[in-house]
Length: 443
Ligand code: URA
Image 1 (tube, rainbow, N blue to C red):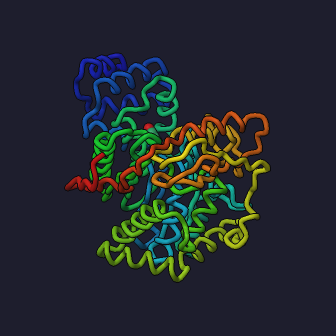
Image 2: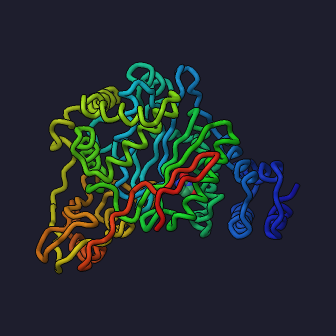
Image 3: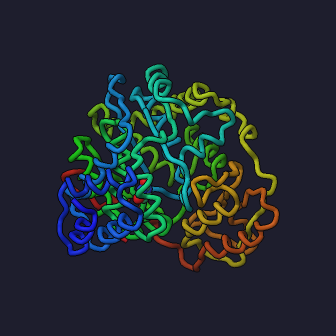
């Protein structure tokens, strides 16, 4: 077999068989296929597309390129949850302790932030002492002891995806549904869960900008999961505006704790509670309506909050942060951005806010960039609110003395106002399982 023939076959629009995809994946990981041929192959796949079978084979080959986490010693159904990436998305910090507090074990490997979207591991790393680099034995032991553990992805989780993703990043081949779906699902399959719940973000701040594209991506991932023998479902949720009010690592931890205390913003609460309820329903095969009730009780009785404190303590962090937020990293500069006109807020550009947060220090452009855990933005107004000239729109938290004023201007311009109140749009737009696509809203 020659890589040249595989490239030309895909270039001419033909379907590849498993052996050919295996030749590419294994050859590229071992360094036998050079970057220039891998790039040509990825561009051919990007333009010609991969069908569901090819996409699924690619995902499994990448999953098998490294370690597969064996969670079989945990004698319960493990449901993994994955977000395709958003701004202000702290749902894992909320849903995971809720689910565990309802007696359903959570064994979760999470990622770091990249580009304008945040990552759960950076948020947890902002908690003083919290260890997100625990080894496999301790991870599984934590789940057995307290029902929950969250750790970073091991270096050897789907290494083929890591290498191929780096190449896609510099060859304009990221934004293809099959390549995105196989990349995400390779890591989910290797992470060892029995079932997978996907939160596919849609809108300005997401990979997929339209609802239809997001549903196609979700359907593809649901199909890969099914072929791998793992029940997989997906919610499509809105990412035009940031989720909740706080963006930035320690700020998001505070907001997640507020939700666990029953007093956080409703947009975030609605999605987080629904995802938690669905995870429980999938794990124990219970009715979703009953599981929604379990979630509410866990919040009212503060069981989820105490599970989060247990998780923090178990992984070396200071659980007092839930009582005293000042223990978390604090930015030296807190700058108020004020409105220059009156009206209703009709949009807050999630992508623009995510990008400014990176500049303020809260995120990274390259994998090795350092993070300022205290940096970020606190929104004081949300879509649908009224605003008067001079009122505070948001507060910038940063330690970058030289650049925050430029950010303030960009951030002010990322909020649009009008004289009419915008219609209220639902946050959960669709649900996809292996049988159906349920659309809740069009926009
Ligand atoms: N996240 C991933 O892990 N892979 C992609 O291709 C895109 C988003």
